Image (spheres, protein in one colour):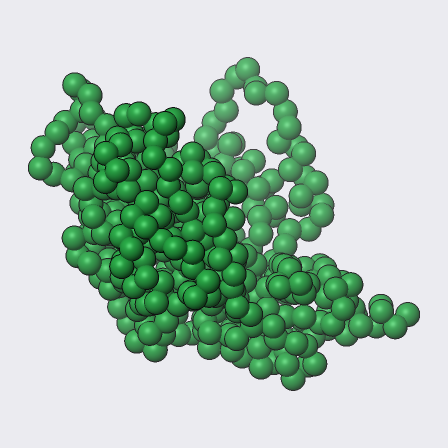
Length: 461
Ligand SMILES: Cc1ncc(COP(=O)(O)O)c(C=O)c1O
């Protein structure tokens, strides 16, 4: 057997020490990096050196320049966008995955990667209460999961119309209609664009004050329609009325695709399951591992009721590729060569267990409710019904709200971003990290309160 690599032990010990130091310091650092740390990234702008560098030296540069310029998403007070913070088991698994350097394309390339992915997909189906026969793919995020589910939809509807879209493309194909809610996430539109279905060639359905599609406003559907519905609006966290929408679609032979980037995980909690349960009637689902389940970046999951449609949309054959009974990961996903990200998904779910995942969902929602309550007490307007982990806050006029957001970000205790919600400027709070504690919420409430006072003070001056 080949000898081990003694030098790597020092390197890997060094990286472990540096990463642990980073994670230890993270809760005590401003969430956003300082301007000087961001400026120091300019040091990276050097010509590629002629001579090789020792890996230790490369690591040292990475840590010295990179670590201070990160946004601290791992420490429990990052409430921007909808970002999870990697669970310890997921971080550890990603190190193993990197050491193994497995290509998750084919089973023969890595029986381990394929097996962990199979198991992880099975657990996701189980936790989301989706049919056990669903086809699945582990992709980079919900954008690609939407792409993957919609590619299967495109295949199935056009096959029914006698058209082989993978072979012939969309030129001359029977037209498909795509229906979305007015509050559709932009990533779904991006996926439609990549599939040749058009970002703007969609029928938009009006939504209510929470961003939920109005089922009674659906256009006439038929068996060449894809209806895209949402479990968890990126701003309000609201869920489309899936039971009615799926029933109408089913009666017409339409395909229902669910963008459930984070909201679908409500199914994992007995307390919140009712919000997601109607979505089981759909045909395809997109969700993220790197949001609520706190798998490290990146990890998305696509599931398709009819695995044959997903396989037909994604599989390719060539003389050098194996064929047979076993599931080949790349036959269900857009990529061929791919990181074994199913392993990190497996590790996160294995470490949480059912109870841990339910607790993570429940805790995030409780923290979000506490944010809403604490901010109302401080005189802010909460613009959404806080149904899960999302809170939309107005501090008054658009100018005051924008100023308050800027002060929150500069203060560094926590980080929240801004949005426009139904004509109002708002701050978004998304509680999506396993690491967030009640203390983090109280510290952040105080910081947001200070920012609000400052923004109001500025208005009076
Ligand atoms: C509802 C919804 N869909 C899709 C996405 C895109 O997810 P990703 O960035 O993982 O591709 C998001 C991201 O926040 C989202 O909230």
